[in-house]
Length: 281
Image 1 (cartoon, rainbow, N blue to C red):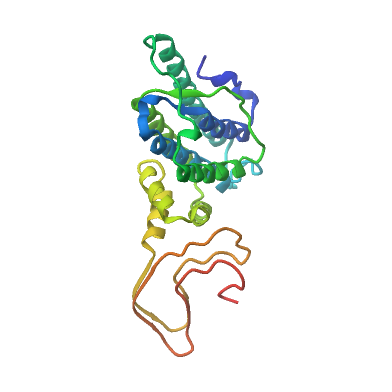
Image 2: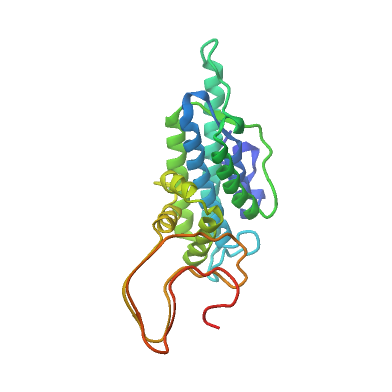
């Protein structure tokens, strides 16, 4: 196994979109050994947050349909740097697979090497897991690229290293091809579709150190809207508003108002607005 060919992929022969798809595929093949105990659910959620962040980036730069990744001045060198970064993510997964296989060969006789399955998860965690997997699947426009056998992580240190390195590489690729507005819109949609505040609290915790944008948005939704000492003379929009063709969920976040004053002839949207006629119409 060389740096150039994790999982047998000849990198020079495939597109950046296929590399991206392969990276997203890998998350699905990781399982958790019995050493994790009940922590395996939160560990799986943290890995889901990393996958969601990567797919959000891919969606924000239109990776399947825009060869310049949402930038007019993109150079061939920059595309190659992005490919190299995605390749490094694949290498990380390949390395964990090798670690898993070596551990199984040296494990003590009678050691339980089985992995946790969906059947071992709390039913609510299964719902959340399916939601997050659904986001990733929707953003994989061309289906799976890699067809592999699953492998198990047996030590928390292996997961910690994997997550930390993936996060650093996603940091790099987001700096190389930033799309902050598109990412903000996407993370708002994610939070709205997840909806349940208990789920969002779990995500807020799991996203710590993994996905700051998702953590921030989950925190905002949990806290609700808070407004104080606002004077409105004309038209103003200060709360959440989704496009008129919005089709996702909506969250009944709490609102706190203190000192809102709308002058005669003024018009304000301060709460949630999800569909129907646009506020500005």
